[in-house]
Length: 352
Image 1 (spheres, rainbow, N blue to C red):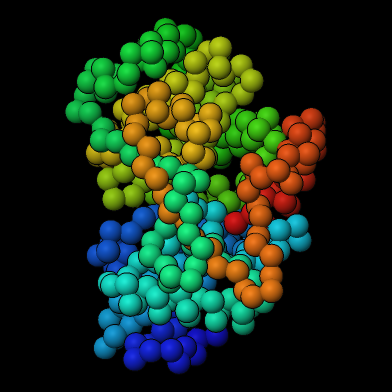
Image 2 (image 1 turned 60 degrees about the horizontal axis):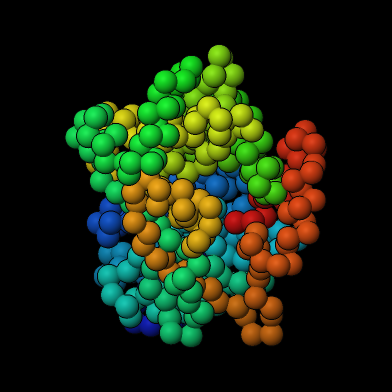
């Protein structure tokens, strides 16, 4: 579907992301507007390859130049229903636009497009939206901090109590390896799947991690104790920042301070790669992850998310902290890991 929307004097159309020239134009616009890795066509492509959820996108153009970009993933789930997510499986990726008028035009185009696709919900993760969208600014916070110039300064920048935990981790029998190969993916998936099962969350398909490693600037840092992987994180790199995106630890990781070692090692590795910022990602306000990041000295910055729901349809609820999902989460925590790993990807690919 490539026909323009007849909404404004601008040309607004659905983009064919499989055309390299179109994708390259969007990449240049994302760089110009300071967008995130989740705005890149490569992210949408990786999500499609890894989950089967279709990559979409809408552009606004004036005189042949892009003036606005809305990355979208068309998400189908037998449990949570259908939606358009901007951007799919991301914590950012809302509208990039040269001005608010373009942003509103893209919102209107997105709602029309959603109706064409029988998607009654659009989730917008950041960016400006039209005034009739529901906006929430108190549910999640982001955490970003500059990296220090050397290892000792980086350690000294960590608040005293957390710094003591890092020092303990440095004395433990732990090794750190960074890579992008099959062994790295295998170790990461083994650790990550165990970690999210313990939280009551279905694990994403391994193919998603494989696609992100293949198509984007990303790597895996794994901490081992006597040869066994106990903590691992898949990190994204974009515009001078590192973001530890999918990470976790085994049951024994806490006693070993393996997660503390992992994040400190990632800070040093990222600086060696040329990064100047550490983006700790988003966390639910007031959650354990929220407090953990504050303990590292990161100041929370409220994030704004918005959603649109078609008239007559209920608001989509895939929030793991909502009351209606608590019994499911409690049950999932009790599943044997092999069963959780078999069923999890079938559910998780529909979360978006």
